[in-house]
View 1: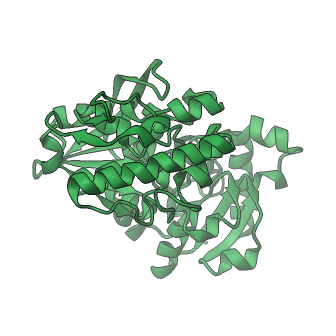
View 2: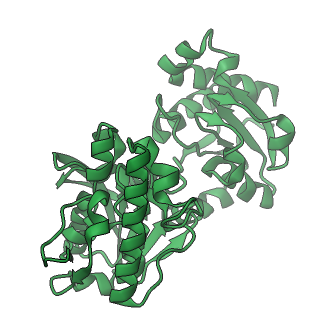
Length: 378
């Protein structure tokens, strides 16, 4: 390889140790030790889940902070991002993990039923107040199983029980909803474009739905799972009666069924996470100018091969004839697996760190070191 080259450094987060931006900085440090004259462009990537906001901010979106109601009513500060383009359109990026994240809730059976997405709706309202006409919703790390009902509550929807009372927030109350009062629903929802990053194919309810597959990790016990599933099934029925739309579609089960309410009341579209974020951040332009791509994530495993951000990026680079190097915390797939995606070399932190604990504690140091070593051998 020549000393002077254009290197695109585009990792995802190293969960539990480095953000994608921190990982990119460490990889750049290692790459420049070997090629000090290289043009090393740091470009954090994400697949539509946690880290999407960070990738948007790194690509030029303006980060903002709003006080919101957290997933079990405690107030918290939640970040989101906005950008106005030259044509005057305004796009906003919102992550469910920021306002309604599992990190802000103890996963207990009680909380699994109470958790809601109200704070996400507050962020959407803030984006609309700021003039957003396109809202990108990144799903991942969510606490709730409420079908997105809490978010619409923050935007003026009133789900009513048989007595005409507004039901409590949370997925545990959805089975009691019999009708919807839409008179106060924010009219700006109809004019905005919603793009929802979804990579799972789970429907809203049923054996493969949001409650059965995802709510146990949010604290739900067996009884809670059945209650939440019944609630989501009823919510779909109420939404269908109110809007004429069937929301039990593949992908609607993501983030506790969050997409369902927006599929019913807006012109929302479900999109593959990596492609959505790549288009939003201008990754294609950066890739077109690259001669080498270095990517990675905390754990490169069989799930990574199903279209997670680093492998999706490797595929895009391969199509353009650009070699790819992977540097990960650990690599649990074979080199043959990676070669099929255009990867020419790979290294893991466990190759250079004395122990897994040390690799996590000083991930940036070992990431830079592993990058230098794999480049020297490439």
